[in-house]
Length: 118
Image (cartoon, rainbow, N blue to C red):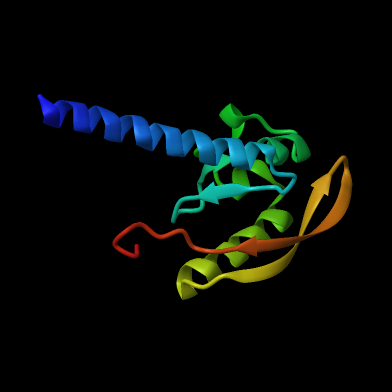
């Protein structure tokens, strides 16, 4: 019985942590997104969706080439590849089209590793 309560508490605590991370991301003025090792979006914050006029449903599980013009996606993918290959954090100047105009952004990209370092 105690083990069941412990598991329930652990599940609730993990959900609570997830909710806190989501709240922090959604209330940040920065544009935040997380991709898997294949470059597909796993999550983004409200500012990302607003800036690029995307919805969560239209973005999640897709890659940059499905969401942005190829010349923009090429740079996003190249930056991601550098981070994945080196396992290091980098600052990049990236370009994106917002409101039909080309804008320049300073992006910080870094790998997120699990407990095994993967």
